Image 1 (tube, rainbow, N blue to C red):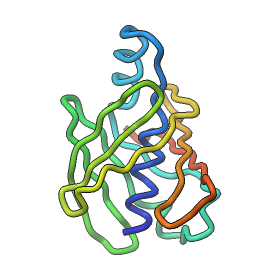
Image 2 (image 1 turned 60 degrees about the vertical axis):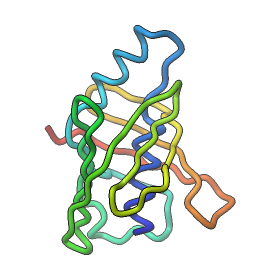
Image 3 (image 1 turned 180 degrees about the vertical axis):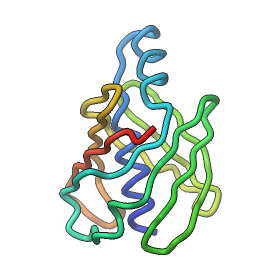
Image 4 (image 1 turned 90 degrees about the horizontal axis):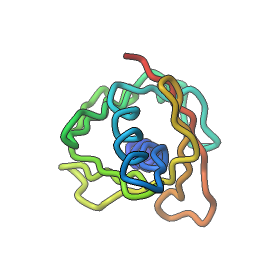
Length: 127
């Protein structure tokens, strides 16, 4: 569950925008399936790098956790440079700051639940 929340926060941090045009561009860049390339979160295990997060048009979100072999769904939204995800199975908003976002890479910063230290995760687009 902690990994799922980390993924959600990271994704939320990926999108930054200061104008409506930038928000639209950021939203379109995030659409697709992403996998973790690297993370400063010390709780990540090798299996965490084989899962994925998918952001769909219209705000639908899904996450595949390769460690638990489970898929969850929910929703996502962007407000400024904050990416927020809400999972159906864990309906507490998870927000991360988008540090950078390109067509192929996304970097999110977030503070895991129960921690005072921000972690940073880099994602690569896989489709």
